[in-house]
Image (cartoon, rainbow, N blue to C red; front, side):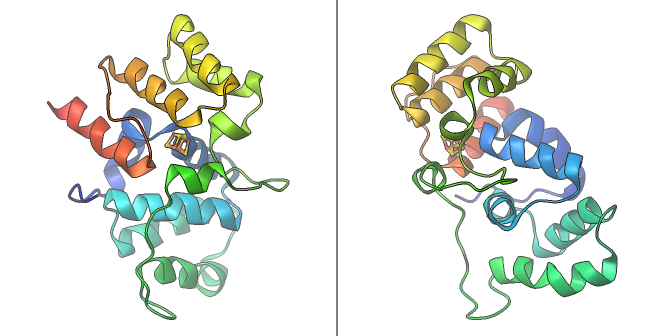
Length: 189
Ligand code: SF4
């Protein structure tokens, strides 16, 4: 899963080009709301760790995004621990791994949750709009929706990858970090 490092200054750019829809959505939401509930913080936070965001940068990222709503003092008290925990620096010091698609697809969402898999959890209307925002052509959107209707969410995500990158992708998406790594490979080749 390793693909070098990513620094805070590059994160907006790579979010646009190389994040799968589940992570784009969380990333946009934290920028918009300056907050994310626990499930969203875990899903995006572990993904960012897998992408190569170092612990110090992760702390700086969340602190800055939450700043309009959460004071530095409260952040350090209520949120920093969990972030360090995800990086294996607290508690049992387990190094937590980013979630797979299977895990993300199978979550049950509560009110105000933005994590999960958009192909599985978005309304059809919201999913179509999100795909158009990603630059997926109307024809490809229909192909994606076809997979969604048949509950082939990872295939829908794979078709999105192909549409956005203009290249075929035989492997099939089974992990958000795989989507990221292969996107960067395509874009840098
Ligand atoms: Fe994310 Fe996987 Fe769903 Fe794609 S299929 S949006 S990578 S959870």
